[in-house]
Length: 397
Image (cartoon, rainbow, N blue to C red; front, top):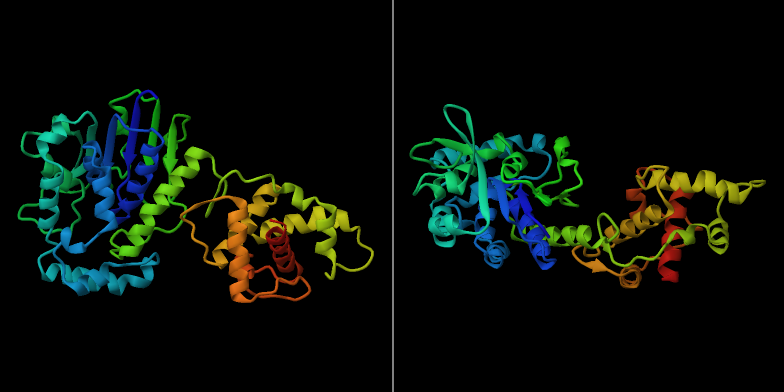
């Protein structure tokens, strides 16, 4: 496959996503020659470079905070922040006060784990080259370096330095988290180039501002759903991120359709939207008024409005619209997104879910349930068309 490079973004405990993604890459025969990472990306990269993917997965699957940090339970609770930080400034303040009160986060358990799982000598001998990023203080000097260039006996110091948050306890602070410098060190990786293929594995779904990533030989793997805050220590959230990374990557590698869900070998659903019988079913009992050219109204008004109502652009294909309808129904019914579905399997889950909820998907009624939540405020017939199309999809599947 030629020369392969992995770039692992920083992001705290969201690094579980990267572990899942790398598992999918390995299962598809994609292994790196060089890895660069920042913060948790550097720590993940250390174990990957030693062939310890299964061990890394085990650490995330069985995560226990005390295996990495010494923290008071209340401080842990205050660190488990959600997405809206502005609303949680008091909670963040309580966490920082608590951390300062105990002199910072004691990471001796993390240091011990690193010494055990990633010995310096093994890292130096690895066939996979490893690079990392940190920031030297008080000089405010970026440090981008490969293991081979780190002074003897200091590899672990540099790995920890790449992930060193300001509230970590330290006898002498010389470095801080490399995310301040470059949270996804592509430039450092390319010092070892050229590469036939590069995989940038992110840890969160924030905006990508780096135009240098838009190249044919670069694949960016990004979380399809919320991954939580970087210090969210909830075990189920960590496991969910692990699985999300795996299935998001399979979707890219195997060409599955869908955004929230992954659909395998999905047939052409677009014919459903232009089926005369479907059109008759949709218009039956709906209040479009007398004297309309129903077919023209359908194509020029209903379908574009349906696309907008689902949060899609009016230029969206029929296939995209119907996939969004399927995903909307799946989200409402809480169907597990960490799986690769064939259409019939997914529709069967929808049938069962609807039966359990006791819903009758009648387009003759103004239903204000799950789909309405995802139609961005659209009311009336557009909502009913959404329900009707889902009903037809489920019944015809």
